[in-house]
Length: 111
Length: 113
Image (cartoon, rainbow over all chains, first blue to last red; front, top):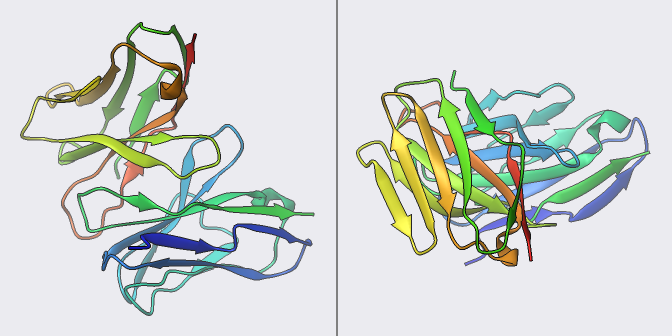
């Protein structure tokens, strides 16, 4: 049972470049989340989804986009990378009112 | 929407002492309150949770208490050990179709040997 898988683990982007952070879960969870965590700080919700075809903005959605075409996958897209997007990104999933499972994180640096 | 406040932001205790972390929530409809532990370089992992129909739950050295009237819940760690050093997050949510899990800002616990 793989749980929540995030790829890549590390990435360096140049300002203005685009990339997609991948997140997949094999637990048939309806809820999926994207958080960013700046050094020494808490988890800030970027986007979340309560099921395939449904997405909603979180606390800090600007500069990001998501899609949820399947239950398993919830990719996060950065269109024009900026230094302020340097952070560690975590994807999580849960069934709803139960334990949330987190991926191992993607450490992104924008230079 | 739900708002979760967590205190303190940092906490240092001597090995063997107890540690208490407190959270308050704003939405009286919230009914599920998990606690997560994040070790360095890893994603958060659930350590204990409590639902609104229960006032206290214990798992070995870890316990969580919930006061629905005051809308606050607390994590208690007894006989702390160096491996308890980590960042702890509380969270709250309700069983409603479109509401996300909302986290507190975290507490960095240091257990000094």
